[in-house]
Length: 111
Image (tube, rainbow, N blue to C red; front, side, top):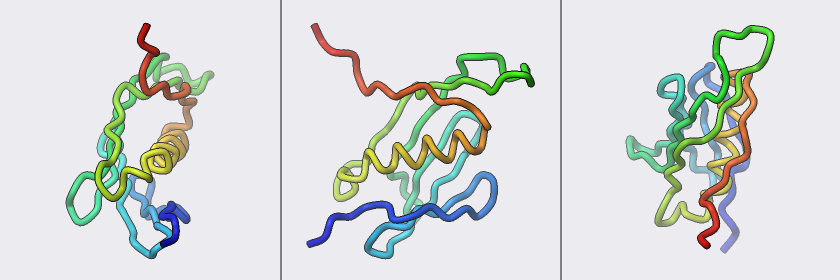
């Protein structure tokens, strides 16, 4: 059995994309509003991210700065694609906003 990976991203328009998997399946990646991105398949949410602005969105001299406030990773058969979905979401959102995304930290070390 070959490893399932995201093979490429196809842009449909500024807010809607297709994520093509190595086995030929496609999933919809959509920017649902200014701060939310979802990955869907057949009407079911697979993964989602919520972004938080860290800078003024009105300053045209500097690119906006964002961080991920919440990431809902996929479960089940798509759990192995969690990192790939996150990278796709980050790439598309940075392109959409012309912004800079701060690195994602899944959780602070307990201690």
